Length: 406
Image 1 (cartoon, one colour):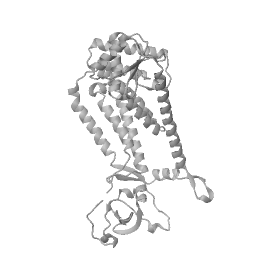
Image 2: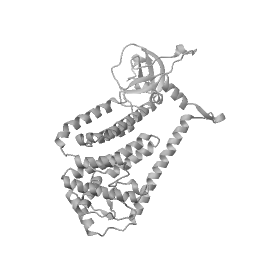
Image 3: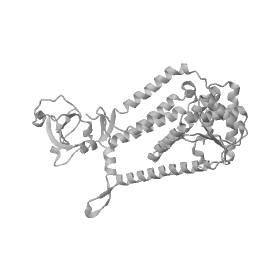
Image 4: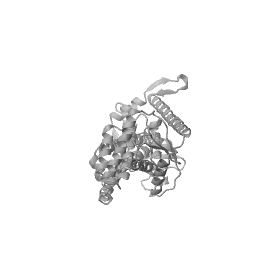
């Protein structure tokens, strides 16, 4: 038997679960105490579960169908409502055709914007002169060396830049700022940016932007991008301060304050502001949270291991359980002269028999009803029924059972 099936309804429930995961992650992320106690790992795991769920929009043979008698049938009827007729050709433009067309156009435009933005940004970087300040270069080399890497990098100082930021998917480019920073401040900030590169955060952000291009109509996708940007900054902060004493943490905060004041003086364009930076376009509450975490975070990994495993386990269980049910409409043939020809089909009283020629026989209460093709099965709730082998016993309406299953 096929192990998974994709329908409009399984895709819709996947989007609902995605929204739920993002909302829960957003609510938890606002709590400083949670991050101080459990760190950022459970939140990243919860966010990843939501992203994986929205792309894992298949149902399984074990999925329970919860029928809707009123709401879903009306929704389906609305989307199938005809808007235009093509006349003699018999073609009809329905509401869902318009929705799908607008969705595709939005995807194409959003993806095109990402490509153009990336092209313009990296092209502008090529024209920027490299930094010749030996102090900046030496400190960056020290940061890379301490991380155990030997990566080549490029360092530039654009006039428009207001913060230290990272660009480059393969070869890192460090964008410096003219904010006066001490050697210690500069090293801490460069450690933060180097952490972004080591964790491939720029790739993560590109993936999220592509996801947002697909689900451009979903406000929770924008919430995901905003929250993840902040969470990635928090992760880099905590990794930097995990080895610092209180005095060095205050130095790190002072460097954040200097750059934040500089950013208030000069606004960046959307293209320039879209890449990793020491201070992003964060709300005041998020900047305060970063400051609190920098001062109060304690790197006690052993004390967090068991609770984090339990939390991630609960998230994994909820992820698996999200595939247990799907909502589908049900219609009744009331006042229909052909009602006698109408059947109730469910997993208890019905199954399919593979005829071996591309068609399947539908049996209800042991009686053969109709033959259908694979396309019909995939597009209806028939995909949830058990598929048995095409043995002669069934074709002759015998009650003997064939024990072989696909």
